[in-house]
Image (cartoon, rainbow, N blue to C red):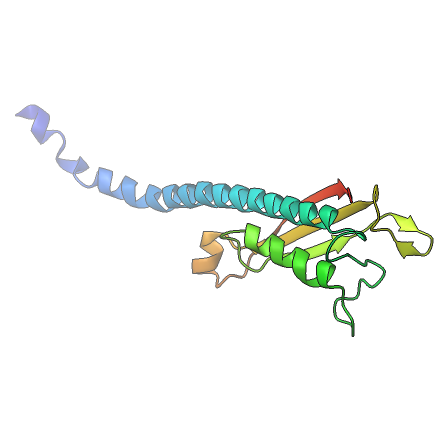
Length: 158
């Protein structure tokens, strides 16, 4: 009886502690979920860039269709179909679940004044996408975002 009477003033203590710690616990849980989502999306971007690079090394200057990196301006009058359309499409199709993927294709090796798309020349494909953490998405109107990037570099084989 004395044990029960001695705890009369502690009836709401657990409820108050729970109310104080709940926001912190939810922040930690959503933070862990966001880190997991970010790692997954970055791995997906790296895989997608690798798939785009594989397509690019098969479709060099001797491929069918052939890549022509001497006209890298994709917004121009005669954009290269492989560089401006096919490689980005391959990357976006491989990036399942990642939205707003931007693709950059670069031929860093030069053969005279023009970029090289021949055998033994390198090609680099970078895929980037914005990542919006859950608290920013739901509480801040997507004000805070991180840009995730995956890239790949291979040597043209044919």
